[in-house]
Length: 170
Image (cartoon, rainbow, N blue to C red):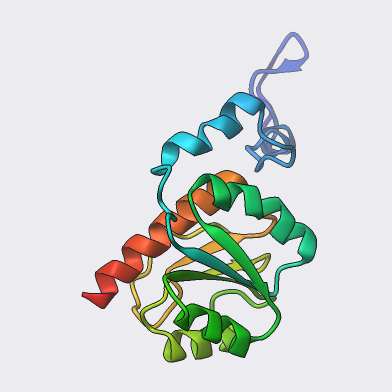
């Protein structure tokens, strides 16, 4: 490799220096002003009259998202089995938020989609590389979010899931 230098210092940084400064995803909480912007990204009544059914989420995660969902006019119900999730989804307008280890290809998600094709379905998983708000396949999830969940990702995921399911249902 040829190094170009002037006065003993390289003019161009070496590859290790370039890649050590690569953009990395944020690992710390958003500053208050950025977190507050989540409220302006979606309509404040987005979930008015709707229930977010959480399957597979820890009690701490449910406690974390409960005020976020409440601020959008919705309620949160935590369930432990797919049968409980389906029963709750039949009781009124709902969105399913399911945490899986394998991502959107999980067999539980496929079974939920088959049993409740009209209900918006969101996958939450660490196996998901990036959040996805597209649903090109009507038999798939309506949005995929990466864990750990942020308020902004949840807000955008809820909005995308509602829009995608409405599109596929009509």
